[in-house]
Length: 479
Image (cartoon, rainbow, N blue to C red; front, side, top):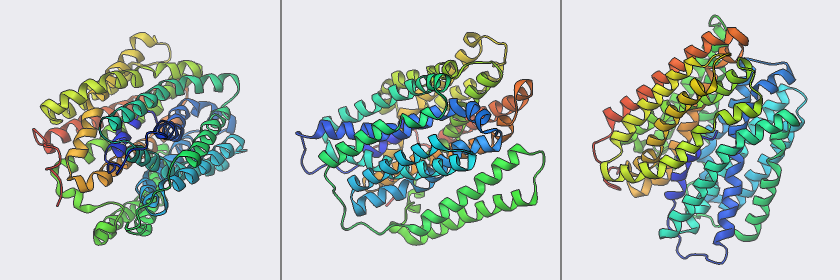
């Protein structure tokens, strides 16, 4: 989704500085990382606008539509850290090319899917490809540039990501209205081809020979746990009562995730998730804040365009354009808030920002089928985006400051994965709303909006309770 680039940029910023610059090819390497990353960002933002059209085309709704989103988010959330470690072991360029090629082939499969089962399979493969390409494209970006050049490169990457987040839903909506929803997957093919060609031509295939082996047990447990939990929550939210199978799935998911934590603790520095990170109270608070805030935001990004199309009779293009305040305000406000947080510390903006976002979520309950966009949806999205703009840049800074320099890479990667887990869980709980149409959509939409507001409010409370008044870079971490 378009919301995630703001939490991913810390991965590039935490990469070890290069031993020497590569001025001859640096510009092409930057272009490569932008093209590769854009696959994940644009696809995630466009799919929300396409859900009603997909449901009508394949005669599905409710939990099935939730899985169009979550079949992608599940492997991406569970395997994001594994993809980064694999790049250290086998070469970042190799994993970038493999991940991009897999994403492109999966996109073609989604475009040709004859039914929902094939679409789910393609989305899962897209998620695996994104888990390989995203951390390695950002690690390549961070390893190529040093000093002021790194800051400029990350700034360009973030600006292009914001532009893609703004244009993606609008362009995708136009394609849906004129060509059909399958076209939104075909637009992934040209940038994927460009990224592969440029990576093979200009990016060195560096690897870390001394890196620990892949944490296959951790990756498997995280995937199984999130899959069972997501399936159970999706079915539960779309039905009137909890069946024994649903409760067993939820229980099995929780058990796998608990076992995942146990295994990761035993593996220590060889684990994909370093449990030592949680020795920092700041990091605990930031993890909970990220889970809740991005869960609230992701739920709104799925549900608002769905409501506008299903109840307000918006076209896909109009629904995509309706979301423009979010990426634009975040892009304009993040740089200012980043500088302010550096002076006053992240605690205040990370408390106030989510609380303002909570007000924006609550304001969306005024969105109805016959209401004016400019008096209902626009002010709600504007307030929501203002709250996010206040929070996203300080969150990136706070994550890097909450641990010592040795752990910044895994901390930023874990925080990025947690943001997507928040979106995964939120979307799983929208099954009931996505199964409703017309006037019947009003009640579940309002319930979801209030739940998102509560989650954002709880995120602000986590910042106030756990984050210290003033972080000092590099000294707040774990031993």
